[in-house]
Image 1 (cartoon, rainbow, N blue to C red):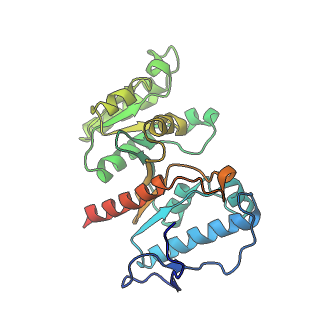
Image 2: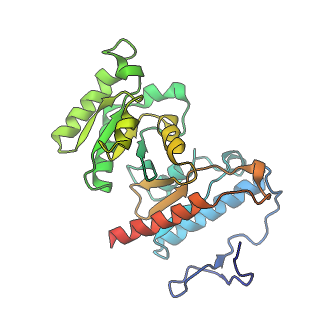
Image 3: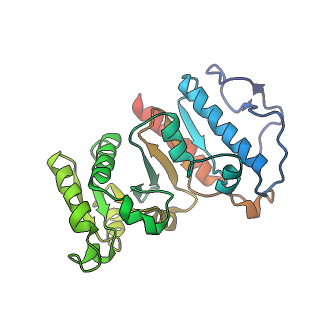
Length: 270
């Protein structure tokens, strides 16, 4: 990897240092590469908790996360669906959102790691309005598209009425607040329009609705950004890939992009 084998180990973040150094959170972890285990899960949680602790102390300005294996994490006592929900809880933020971005498309998720059958009952006018306000504030008044839940945006209630009862009223209220937003737009066209430049970001109703187009357009070069946190947080757009662990096959491009975007976001705040 071209990394010097004499990486310095320190006990706490040090702003006087540059380059790569190691903070050893755990002295010894018993694990097998590429295998799900309680020990691996506990380690993942410990690293994340330490990053949050240092951020709260003001020792670091950004957190870049690599993927956690959710099954290992659950075995290790992790009770959250993923990083995003844990970070929102740890920093006690009332409103947050997961945004996936690459050079061609940005999407924000209304619901994240939930079963598809539960999505309709988790959608509300208040939740959509809250996410639209957060996007508007975080991205400095972008042009937002809201994706429909149902095929053909419900076809006037023929294929579902969430657009009529929930999504469209939220969009109209957001417009009255000065937010530049359009919707509900059928998801078989909204991403095409966004890629063409009509919209800066698409608010999606559920996880795969947003992640499929993002990964199709830029797998390995997309970044997950958590909106609403007091610190910058970015992440890679892929999972742990235990099937190739230890084989030297992993592609680091998304990780490199996540670091670069974190630095760009920090610079934009100064």
